[in-house]
Length: 165
Image 1 (cartoon, rainbow, N blue to C red):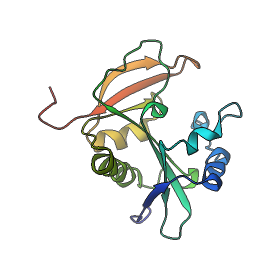
Image 2: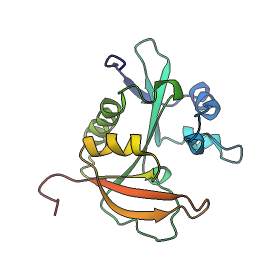
Image 3: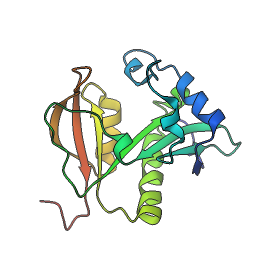
């Protein structure tokens, strides 16, 4: 287990965006690798935050809004949630950093974007990430099919306790 990290959040830079596109996740997580046909300019459109380690190295990213969604065949996205996407640098995955990393992003979105309810999509096979999201208070609301790849995903939401059913 890696010690707790201190992260600094800030706008994604061009060199950092290039780093993200070069990250290579091992099987079975290779679906998270940046595809050649994906436009890296998306990483610089303002919806992505770089998460830097204490030494300034890029440790991960957070994404908020439409770029954090996946195309679904079911059309289940409803208003009232801020969509969240995130990624840790491959060598940091599986080291117990996920909860603090996600909580930092949610706190930032509450403070800077005024968000109160969050939604994310996670690959159905990715039990490691699902465990992190559940530990942070997310719950599953739907199983969906990615409109382009056919992969199965779970949609999960976090809501303040007074909104939960």
